[in-house]
Image (cartoon, rainbow, N blue to C red; front, side, top):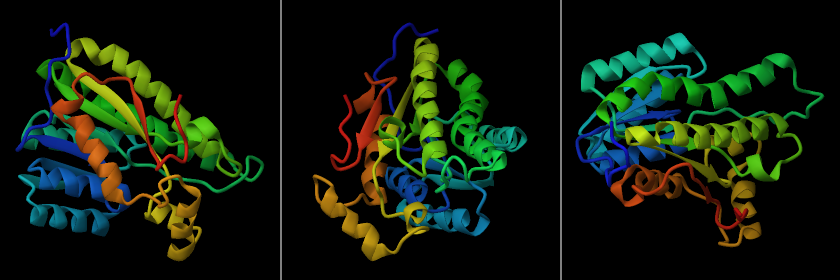
Length: 258
């Protein structure tokens, strides 16, 4: 068993699993890793979207791609998806826990089913997916996991209490798992995105209004998926080999992290 994390990273031809890959940030991450020559396993509940991502990844230069219809809050589905990846490609080096859902309800408007679903997808999903690949990564003595949190975990926001709570849980999970799995050569980090041009914020506004929010951000613009994808690629690479248990704010300066 390795006693230190070696300078290691995702190599061309190695595999990474990306959850929530049918659109938005997940698709952007998948395309970046495909351009870098990785094999990409694309998980989502949206069949058409995830298959479109797979086709785009093949065009972008992926060493290989596969799709799995996986609800990350469903333990049976996660286990089946992991078995498919392990059988086809062996142990993946990277796992990107990107899948998430958002609720724009106040606490009093939020019923138990909505609260429970948010927890299962956003927090339990990270737990189930990490646990599903953990034994193989531990046996291999290498791997990197990137979890998606949010600035809402630190700043809070009205009508986003359930979302912020789940993303705070992702931060705690990231820190704890990083400590548990560091002796096995596995790094675990998190990203806290700011406003990005994706389907989640566009569900409540239009593209013009969304882009106008950039005027309130120090760097003067909202994020594009490729901005986040580049940071994911870094966290999976050997260039970040001395980083674990960290949370990076990728938000144009909208929220600075102490």
